[in-house]
Length: 148
Length: 296
Image (cartoon, rainbow over all chains, first blue to last red; front, side, top):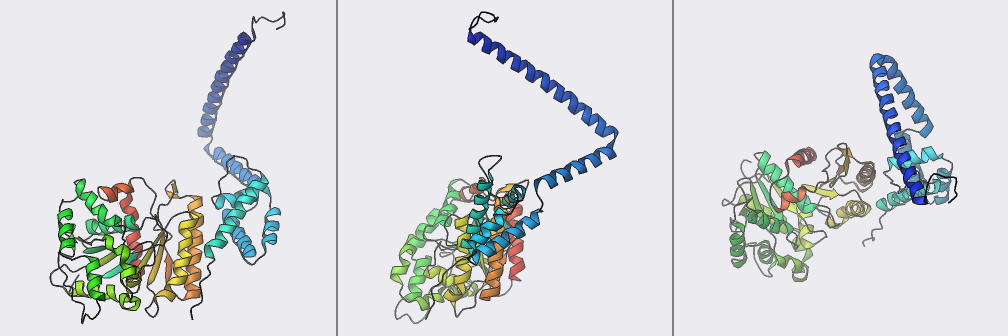
C-alpha cells in the first residue's frame, strides 16, 4: 500500500468504500422517493396530460418491442407449424430467422416459452419456438394401425 | 328423476395416469350432490381403487360417517362387488344376467351420492374374461338393472372413474355412456393422450355410436385468475385437435374453453378428507354447466 493514502490497510479502504456505497444508495433512494412524490403530484394536478403521456409511452414501448400483435404472433406460429408439418423444416427455420428479435420474443411469450435469462439470445428464442413447433406437430400426429 | 328414465352417464377417462381423473370424478359428484338436488351414482372402475380408498379416508378423517369399511367387508364376503357382477354376467352357460341390485351392492355415501366401489380383482379381469364382445354390453345391462331395481334410488347421473388404459371394463363403459369427459393437464405428455383417444375411440367401439366427447384443462396454472400463457398454448393445441377430430373422424368432440379447473394444492383435501374446497366450487360448477350443455 502506498504511503500517500489515509488507510492503514486494504481492509480499511474496502470498509470505507462500502460505507460510501451505502450512503450513496440512501441518497439515491431519497432522491427517487422525492421524484416519485413530485410525479404523483404533477399527475394529479394535470390528469388529462398525464393520461396522454401514459398512452404515448405505452405506444412507444409497444412499437419498440414488436411489429406484430399477440394474435398475429399466434397466427405466425400456426403458419410455421403448418410449414414444418408439411416437411418444410428448413422453410420454417428460415421464416423464424427473417423475424426480428422483438417479434420472436412476442411469439415466444404468447406460446408460454420461458427462458432462464431475462435477455435471452436470438438463438435461444428461436430454439424455444422450434421446440413448441415440434410439440405442436407431435401432439397431432398419430399412426393408427389399419384394421382388416 | 321421474319414473324409470335412464340416467345421464359420464365417463372420466384419459390413458395418461395422474391427470386427475379420480379427483375430477369425486369433485363433480360431490359438487352435484351438495349444491343441487340431483341424485348421483359414482362407479370406481379402476383396479388401483383410488376413489374407493378416498371414501374410506374421508370416513377415517370424520368427514363421512364411518360405515364404509364394514359395509365393504360384507360386500366382499357376500360376493356383491362389481367383479362378482362381471363374473355372473360372463359365466359360461348362464341363461341370463342374474345379479339383483340392492344396497349391498351400492353404498350410500349421502342422500344424493351413492357409490359402487372397486375391487383388487379387477386387475386380473383381462385374464379371466375372454369374451370381449360379450363384455361390451355388460355396463349397459348393469345400468338397466340399476334403473329397474325398486331397491335402490333413481339416479339422475352416473359418473364412472375409468382406469388409465383401455380395459374390458372401460370398453364396456365407453360403448354405452352419454359423455366421455377427458381431463388434460398443461403439459405435453398429458395432452398427447387426447389425440390418441379421439382418433382411436370410434374405431375401437364400433358398431356402437361414439359418445359425445368433452375435453377440459385440469390443473390449470393461473396468473391473475386466468390461465398462464403456457397453459393457454396447450389449451389452444387441444382445441385444434378436437376440431380436427370432429371434422375428420365424424365424432362430436368439444373443448371447454372456459370450464377449466385450476391447480390448487387444496384440491387434495377434497379427496382425502373433506369436500371440495370453497374456492374450487365455482370451477366444478362451471365444468358441470359445460357438461350439461353438451349433454342436451
